[in-house]
Amino acid sequence: MASAGAERANMSFIALIVAVATIGGFMFGYDSGVINGTQDGLRAAFNLDDAGLGVAVAALLPGCAFGAFLAGRLADLFGRRAVMMSAALIFIASALLAGAAGSAVLFIAARFVAGLAVGAASVISPVYISEVTPASIRGRLSSVQQIMIIAGLTGAFLANYWLAHTAGESTASFWLGYPAWRWMFWMQVIPAGIYFLALLLIPESPRYLMLKDRDAEAGTVLTKLFGATYANDKVREIRDSLAADHHRPRFSDLIDKSTGKIRKIVWAGIGLAVFQQLVGINIVFYYGAVLWQSVGFSENDALLINIGSGLLSIAACLFTIFTIDKIGRKPLLLVGSAGMAVTLAVMAWCFSTATFIDGGMHLSDETGKVALVAANLYVIFFNLSWGPVMWVMLGEMFPNQIRGSGLAVSGFAQWGANFAISVSFPWLASNIGLPITYGFYAASALISFFFVKAMINETRGRELEDMVG
Image 1 (cartoon, rainbow, N blue to C red):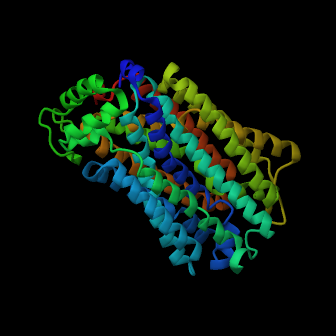
Image 2 (cartoon, helix red, strand yellow):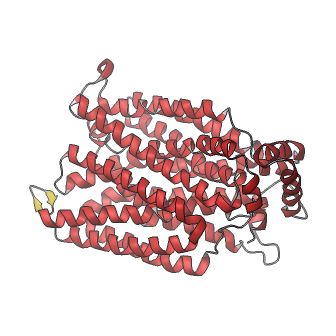
Image 3 (tube, rainbow, N blue to C red):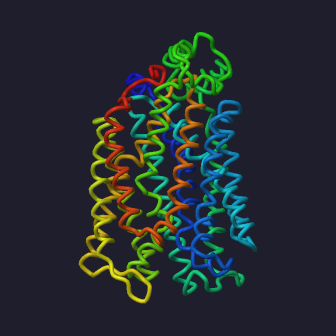
C-alpha cells in the first residue's frame, strides 16, 4: 500500500497482525534450532554414526521443502490463515512425537512431519505480512519475521542450555525420568499452542480474498486496516492488477506466455532462495554446538556461544528493520554478500591451521579467538542482509497472480538447498575438512554478490500491484 495508506493505517491492528503472523517465524526458528544440543542424546539413544546423525539432523529439511511447496499452493486454494493454523497443529503433534520416539526411524519421521510445518510457516508468514501492510513500511514490518526466526533459534538454545545444565548434561534423566534431550523437543509445544490460539484473532489476507472473488470480504478487511475511502480505491487497484484473463492461480502462470520460458522473476526468486543456503548459515544453527566442541570448547561453552550468536543476530536484524525501507533491499544484499565472503574465508583459514590431538581438532587460543570473531561477524552480515531480506523479497516481489506459485517453487528450492548443505556437512567435515568446506561457502557468498547485481530489481516502496516479472 502506498504512503497514503500508511498515513491512514490502523497501526495498532496491523501491529497485532504482524505480531501473530511472526509467531510462525518463531516456530520456524525454534523447530530448526532445537536439534542443536540434542545430538549427544540422539547418538546414545539410537546408536548413530556420523552419517546417521546427519540424516537425523537433516530429516526436518525434506519436510520443509515439501511444506513450502505445498503451502504456496494451498494458500491460494484455502487461504493464508488456514495454512498457518494447520502448521500450528502440526508443530504441536510433531514435537510430541519427536520427543517420544523410540527408534531412529520414528524420530526421522516425526522431524519430517515437523518440516512440513516449518516450510509452510517460512513462506506463508512473510507473504501474509506483505499483503496486509503499507508499502512504505512493508520491508520494516516484514523484517520482523527474521527477528522472530532468530528469537526462536535463541529460545531453543536457551531452553536446551537450561535443560542440559539443570539435568547435568543432555543425556541425563530429567522430569518423569526422561532424558533432558527429549524435553528439548517437548518444550516447543508451548509456543506452538500460543501460535494456534493467536491466529484466531487475525483476518484473512485481502489479496487472497480477491483472488477468490470475495471482494466484499476483502473490502471489509481493508477498511479495518486503512479506512473506507482507501479500501474502496485499493479493491479496484487489486482487481485491475490481476491478469486480464483472471483465473484460479496455477503453476503454468510461471511461464511467460510471450516467450514460452519461465519468467525471469521466478529465476530471481529461486536464486535468492538457494544462495541464502549455499553460504552455509544453517551449519552454524544446526551444528554450532558440535562445531565449537570439535575445536576445543566444552559442551557448556559451545551452547553459550550459540546463545551469544543468537543475540548478535537479533541486533543485526534490528539494524535492517530501521534501514531496509530507507536504503532498499538490493544494497543490503550486496553488503551482506561481500561481508560473508570475507568472514567465511577467514574461518576457512583458521580451520586450516588446526592441529589434531587424540583424533580431535584443536585451534590455538589466538586462532580460536579469530575464528570465533569471524564466525560472529559472519552471523551479523547474514542477519543484516540475506537473512531478513530474502524473505522480505519473496513475500513481495511476485505479481499477485503468481505469488503463491512463485513462493512454492522458491520455497522448495530454498529448503532443498538447506537439506543438501546440512546433510552433507558431517561427511564433508570428516572426509574433506573444514577449510575446504568453509571455502566453498565463501565462494558461494562471492558469487551471490554478482547474482544480486545482475538479477535483482529493487522493490522498496513499490505497491504489490506494481510488481511485474
